[in-house]
Structure formats: structure tokens, C-alpha cells
Image (cartoon, rainbow, N blue to C red; front, side, top):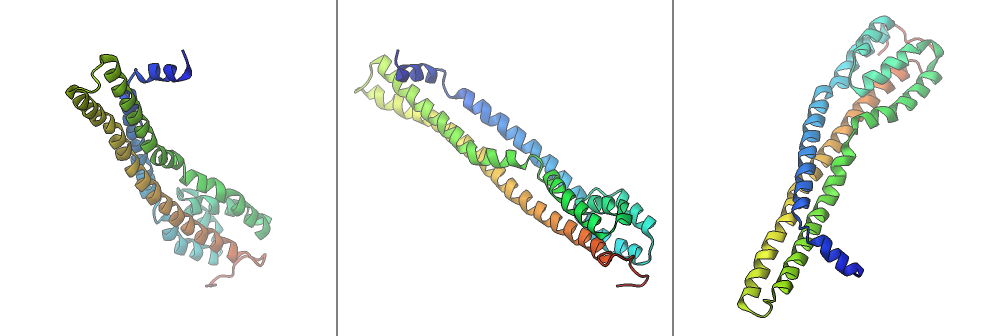
Length: 219
């Protein structure tokens, strides 16, 4: 048995298992979309809302109050600022190093599992296409085995087989399109959240950039 015949035997299994695979990927994608959507909603705007109160506390020299403000923060900027303030006595260089070291980790936290959505969006159509190709191969294989080529039954068998095989491509697209949209939307959310985080952490660092504690009443 040559390689082609081995593949034909494999195609005899049919394309139904590919539909099950696409359904599993779709359910996983939807679950991830819900989880990420709720996560981003929970931290949206929190760094921006913290900006004024944290600035006021630090300008008034109330470091303990500032630490309490960021101590319960769940957004990336607040979490980074909390570590920076814990090391405030080490000076601005140490605070800047901490900010630079923690930022990539916070970004990865925001992007958690987004690569899965991107992968599904990019590859689901090809998985569906594979199902279509396997279905068409099996259709022609069955026609050959039945010996109906050239008869009126040939046309009906081909059309019916292709019709069923194309379902896999359609399902693949239905899985891919929402995944791609969600991936792009969430990617913009990550950029916006990291922008808020950078504003907050740079504010903290700027108040200590000269190596001195901010003076009361500074703006």
C-alpha cells in the first residue's frame, strides 16, 4: 500500500471529527471571551481614577495613605505603583528599575490566553477546509467503489457529497470570525489599560525624579 492509498484509508474515517474539533474550539473561545471580557471590565478605568488621589497623597507627603490606595489595586498601574512605593526609600533609580521590570509581567497578565484566540482565528478556516477536502475525497472514493461514474447517479452523489463537505468550511469560518474580532478588540483594551498604567507609574516616578520627596502643595 503506497502513501496515497494510506491517506485514502484515513479519509474514510470522514470529516465529522473535524466538526467536533471546531465545536470544541468554538466553546473554548467563547468561554475565554467571557472570562477576558469580565476581567477587563473589572479593571477598566481604575488606574485613571486612582491618578488624582494618589498624586494628592504623595504631594502632601502622605506615603502611607498612598500605599493604602494602591495596596488593594487590581489594575496594572496600581500594582506596579504599590511595589514602587514599597521601595521608595531606595530612591528614584530603584523605583524606575522596578517599574521597568514589572511592566512586561503586567502586560503578559493582561494578554493571558489572547494568543489562543488569535490562533483559533487564524487556523479555524484551514481546519474547516481540511474537513471539506477530506469529505470531497471520500465522496469520490465512494463513487469509484460503487461504479456509478458516468451515470445520472454520479452527479447526485457528487453534489450531495460536496454539499455536506462544505459544511466544515462554513463552520470553520463561523468559529474564526468571532475569535478574530475578539482578539482585535481585546488587543486594543490591553493597549488602553497599559496606557493608563504608564500614566500612573510615571506620575509616581516623576514626583521623586530629583531624589527628593515631593513638597507639600506641589502640582
